[in-house]
Image (tube, rainbow, N blue to C red; front, side, top):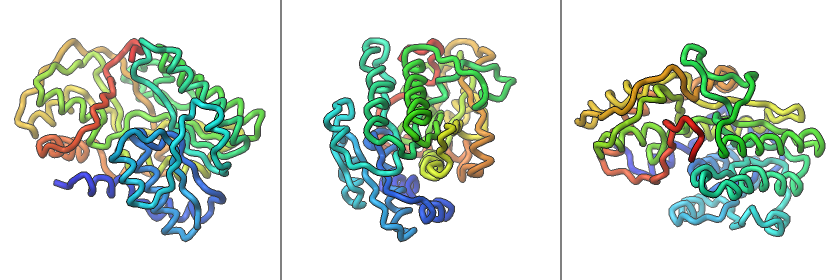
Length: 338
């Protein structure tokens, strides 16, 4: 089984298509919110792709950088870092202006208790950022939570379907989208909304949540009977390549894997690998938060690793004591309370 260094390498290795895209993409790239769950490996992939393309692009990672592991990872790989609190207008204004922004700033957990903080992070910060960067290209990390629960038989929400956010987190995430839509309409920004659910990095994610509950003998809710997920390396590559799809007309892109995965089946499969019997709670319903990623797959192809491989890796990671981020997804939440 691979170690954490190999995992980071696997998550940040750019494909040939990304390298070729970077030869066509003009301007430097700034990753706002680069210290979160997805950002470090995405920043590293951008740096590796820029070097391979011989483009001379600056790759600038911006965050408060509270995790020493992330700081060391980016420093070792010569990713330029700027420490900044993006809720502070003065610190946003001090950032160097670039042509390309990967926007990853967001807050989900703790929303129920501190909704105002969540709205500031999810809708206030975009106002500061777009005011400063104006007519840049933006790939804006959003969430499938902007959609309502969908019937299992429908195959998941499509980009053209009406939104229907449930709860403060989902509503404020839609608020984030609306601010960037305003920037496209009035500031000349080129925007792609990157509606993700759920990235798998082995240190966190839906599969990690399920497998950890199996080992800890905690009940696994099946009230939300199914989910989508996707390898984070694919997420990183698609996000960076999506800069070339950003448009003043605003593009919307569901990003997830092609499979609709049964919670019960995933738990039973990983339980067998872990040598533990999963405990289930509740009864399956006929609705879940699901996204149809056919548009993404049409543009960028299928992920290199499917759900079966990810489950094998996830079980091995936990069996071998791999480090966890302890950031549960709460994928089973049905009322939008995070």
